[in-house]
Length: 255
Image (cartoon, rainbow, N blue to C red; front, side, top):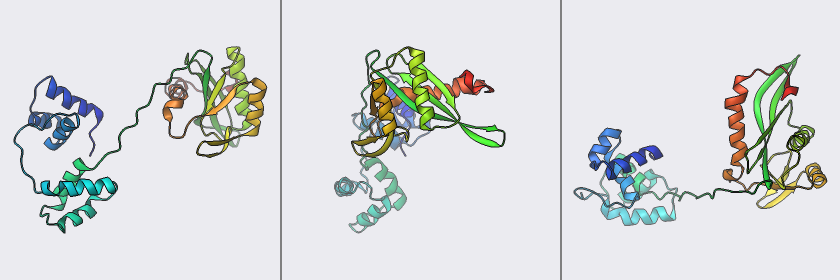
């Protein structure tokens, strides 16, 4: 089982700064000593202490080659394969060892996106539950636009997420700011993107007509690239945790 990043940081700090032994670190953090060794090994540190020969050692080249070719192969299936080649260890211990040798995908590095003033804003809807109006139960939707450079937030609540409300939110932001950025970033919102296949995008024609009238570029964020629209997502979290929770909405027109 993978350790939390803060635990790995403590292991490295106790090892480098406090000069603790592997066993001391394992006992104090209540983790297995092999987990400590794995973190130190991944950090490029040599294994400390006596080198013990394990039953699995002769089979490690075969195991690594197999996992490189079939990275999702289960430990139980791999155990059967190694048993047929002479391994005599238990299945539970084998699964524990394989967790340290299974190749892990390299974490993708994200560049911090920096924009110029007035260059870009990010747009999204946030869902804030429902309101009961008479006998009708209506969704409470927050239209949020954030200027990427200054992090300035525009917020307006609507009782739906239809295109009419979507465009009204845009106009409200432009009027409040006295202008608009050159580029607006959209997630795969139904109000913005009708169809997407890879890099091929089909925008909603009403949004394209609106963008042409106001002369800005609508631009979709890349798939699975949360860093490209992180400002608006953080803004919605801020609104939810620090603004919305502290108020009871009796007159939505005020917001």
